[in-house]
Image 1 (cartoon, rainbow, N blue to C red):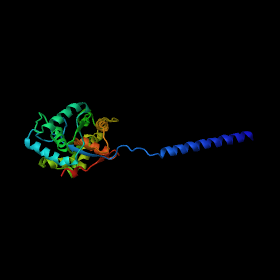
Image 2: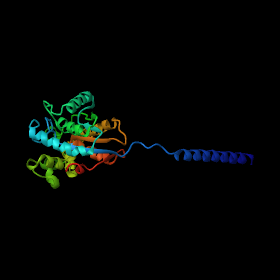
Image 3: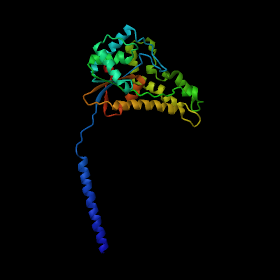
Image 4: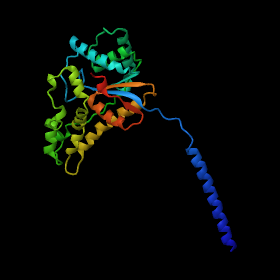
Length: 282
């Protein structure tokens, strides 16, 4: 009987301890916390590369032509209504010092000419000058991947017919944006480039179609596609290295396939709030 009383006593004490700890835990969890930065406004803008690019798909554009430069500057003027406090571009962060020096030189002398200008010098710099933006950073991360692995490297045993069809003319499956781009003005091209279905197309052509390529029992295409996902995830991680708060307004300028991935990443990220590109690209 005494043994039973001892066990009952011990059990009662244990319940009291658990109850006290639970009460303390509940009180602790109910304390307010300072919220992390959230809803930072971002204009996530995609473009074709206006200078030299090793990309397979290119857009004909003479970056040295005076009228073309003026057309780009007109686009920059439209986008400057966003009034960004920070501009992020597709260069690796290790070149930030050189990037900032070039940007400051341009702000002091907007008539200066660059030997081989790209969308960074033509669009981002002018946008920043018009907006009075002080901060500019690069967030690129270079990684090689073989997007032709299913065509020349392996004997495709998964679905070569569909892979070849996608590779030859994937746009036929995206009729909303399947237009002759050579007939479009620069503004129309950039509107098309930032269309959601065109961004979907870019992810598919650059990565997802590779999942249809692989040897018997192999995943060579999927593994190459994963490298492109990895590159964009690392670029997104570089974005998080930039010191931002709720008062910042971030303009991101990249090749549009990266814009497409960032669109998807940011749509799920409570830190950012993407503005509608077409509110500014009128």
